[in-house]
Amino acid sequence: MLTGLALGGLVTNTYFQAITHHWLNRTGFATRDLWYLRLGRMFSSALVTNGGRVFWEAILLVAIFVGAVEWISSWKRAAATFWGVHLLTLVLLALIITLSLHQLHTLGIEASEVARDVGPSAGYFACLGFLSARLRHPWNWFSGGVLFVFFIVALLLPATTRVNPRQEVSANLAHLLAFPLGWLSSGLGNKQ
Image (cartoon, rainbow, N blue to C red):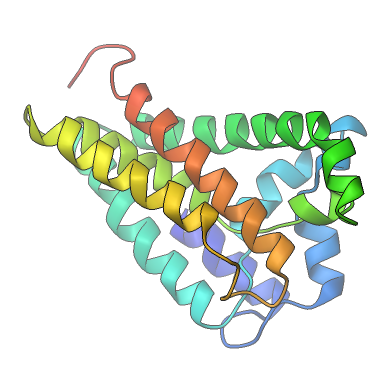
């Protein structure tokens, strides 16, 4: 993942600069990409960030959360958690946005605008969920509950940190979906 992010940053020139609209449109994922079977964007979106500070945050959080899952379990489990939940989150996000299309349209928001995003955050927050679930009882439930409430609050707060507030809402919804999916995925298969 770190190598993929580094290459993505190199190709899109986002180590220190914000991603351009060209690269966002070329590598980002939007709801319509799923319906038009542009499935490669589901993968490319995880290997590119919004750039600058966000790129370095992604590198750090992937190293910590994905690396910790790899350390306590295996590289296969880390990859399955990251990519499995990332892909499932994008599908669920597309379904939620499609089902909410009428309500979004009445607010003047197009579904494709809400979901156009890049970044590995769904995958690394899934790994955070996995790690939370692997803590000893009752800390697994306590940490899972506290972090889940944090993701709910982040979704409900007004958008402030991104250039596009609609993109922030989409990302926060993805995080709210990915964290519990990662937490639940910890119980799948044999615990190592």
